Length: 331
Image (cartoon, rainbow, N blue to C red; front, side):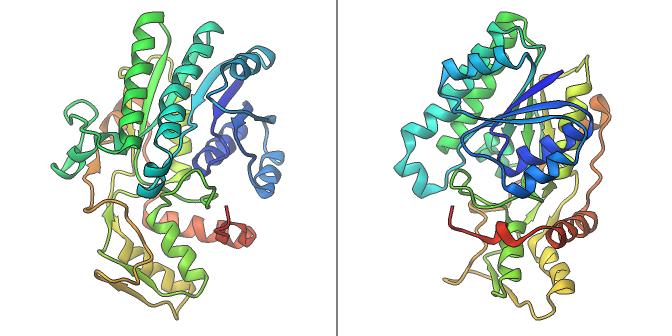
């Protein structure tokens, strides 16, 4: 069984690939840039076989060729541009083309090649303005009100994927990822909105003070938990629902994370409050509500393993075992 993952060179994709390789799956990563060398070394020490193909989801011919040549049976579609405000202004057309039409191209290729399962990696961002109006975000009860191009294109891609499911009897599952952080997160030039924990940890390890506007209460979800949840969803042959939130099921603040960073860097200083020196950008004006993961637990049977303490321990170990490539901001 060969699984195609689009956009697998992003940090979430690398975590998913590691998990799938551990489960003895063969992976083709179709992306516009390769994974870091250290991720390749990580892949080489796992059970499945890994292949990188340089390709763009806007290239229908290339997608069709890859699915044919590598006998793809499952697609995990994660390729996306995640822009900040300035990038949204500068590259609106390309963002829309990649995020939406790229998804249509992957769906078309999957349809033509009779792919057994199609998992679309979406985001909590599709809830848009609704994310700030309630206590819990439910897949069905919370009505998405997307506002930014990223939110709009992700939601449109979701609905299109599910329409393909109805039209062509394809097995399609949509997963909405929460605020993800963890190993392999870095600046790539594609994802312009790194997580709060990444920004704070990077600043701390560069011996910079950490300044944030507010404590940053979120249900931050660890990337290894996301990968494990995707694996469980992939294994499930009789899913009850079309859409699953993937979150941590618990909330904690960036202030708590900084307190934990003090264990590693006792000299770290951090401040909370509006300031021109703020270097942790939450990208939204307020803290969003927590994702409901009841479906993930009851239907898929998956329970997240990483709370703040477990995530901190694992992340610090990853940093210890990895070079400082991820500190570079030149991409």
